[in-house]
Length: 129
Image (tube, rainbow, N blue to C red):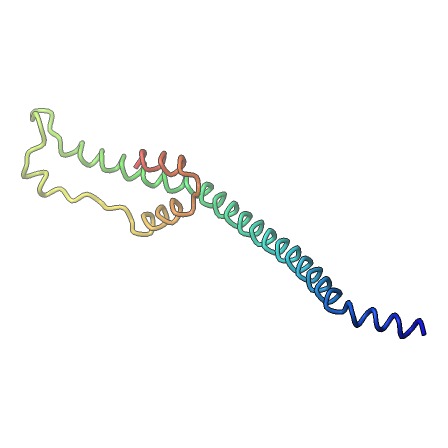
């Protein structure tokens, strides 16, 4: 008799019991999904940090290449200047063929600047260039 009463009560409340179980499953799923999203965000932040560190460590090399280029250009222009002239004659300037920076150096510098996430660092590099 008690077994049939229990079954009757379960039958009567089965919709509520099923709804509660579905709600519990939804909450568990939401918690697991939130944890997975947080983990993905942490991985992405770590990747960005590693990329930023790599870009910053390569930056002195690129800035040194730019500095060497500027010094060489200044020396070549200095050779054109004659102390007897007030300015470099136009015909010498027209024939002057400065060395250009290598495309590899320029693309590496561009890649480095794209990978740095801090705006103030990029602004400082832009001012130097």
